[in-house]
Image 1: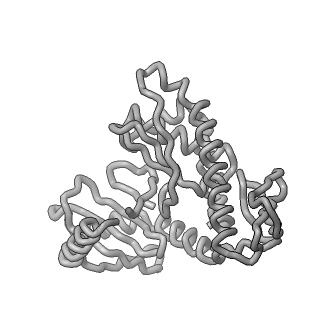
Image 2: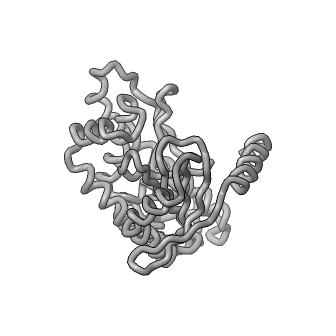
Image 3: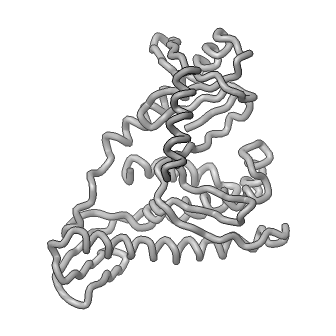
Amino acid sequence: MFLSSGNMQMISDSLYDAAFTCKKTQLKKHRMTQNTVTRTVEYNGIPITYDLERKRVKNINLRIRSDCSVYVSANIWQSLTGIDSFVKSKGKYILSCQKHFKELLLHKPGPKQYVSGEIFYILGNEVKLQVKAGSPEGIFYDGIHIVLTAEDAMNFKRKQKLMTTFIDTQCKTLFAEISGETYPAFKKYGIPKPAIRIRTMKTRWGTCAVNNGIITLNKQLIEMPRSCIEYVMLHEYCHFLQPNHSNKFYTLVTRFMPDWKERKKLLEKQLPVHR
């Protein structure tokens, strides 16, 4: 999670391959190590250690990583005293995020085995998997059970492929439906209907490539209640009108979806269960 001294709205961060990208990342990490120092402040008697990187940024930026480490970036002209004060002023927020990430780790399920009785989540509902040997191969879903039929019920890779195809199909169908419901409110602004793409992302629910007219959604959203998916979809749509996370952006989100904060809280509440 990320905070800026100029914009106090929370947003997600992300990580993104190829040999060129790898070399570029390694070089960036080398430069970061050279420009980074580790500092510690106290908040209500609790020490908070953070990594400070000097870089060309307008505000003091604070990021709490999923491993509970704290990262701060600030311009060279920002004083250490001022940066320490900023971090201390966000002490409650930092400790809350660290507690949240620790809970995620405690509740994080192990890798799927694709065996009968295993639990999956579809639109916030707990669904049990039933595996049986047979032909033709495929998956039947009735809203309560997922029945997976494979010629070899012990073949892990085959079962995994069948489930992956099923989940991808569910995502494509539902996300396209929700996009279709969201688009009419934006059509009057002259925005072409965006293409919806699906991928696995570690730290973002969605992204918007404004110039390319593409919204990419995290496939794990299929596990969340529909209202949460609708919120993420609208959030990304709003970037076509406001490609940032400014106050104007959130005013826009509120205009289109007055209860977006409740939906966002519901989405965050689901995390310890599903991640």
